[in-house]
Length: 173
Image (cartoon, rainbow, N blue to C red; front, side, top):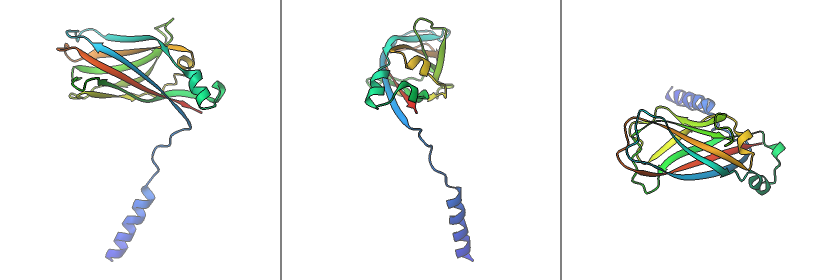
């Protein structure tokens, strides 16, 4: 009787297994920006850290992977994070984050490519940001684009924080 129960358990467990998330074919496009979150900024104001004239390297990525623009169906966020450069930043003052890309000629026309709301109460030195499913190809295929890291704070900052914004975009075929 015990053997039948164990056998049934393993059969049912085996049937319920699924493959991990499938990664669509394509390639990653990596970007990094360093910036400083100054001391004493207010929690009552939305803070924008904008990086304009970012080189997309889109044509370089296409050439490297022997692809054409027509073969790329979308460009979506793979990963995003804000991390203290020296390992000593405490990002607990951040309440929510929105990452947006846009053409610098029209900052009001943007796509939110990642967000985090709410931010954990004690994120420490590394704050992963949740990728959205938004297609940013219309901005990323240009030679230059802009990034807006938008922060809402829980409390005023008590120290200056040198941070790095890491962004991994995925060009899908």
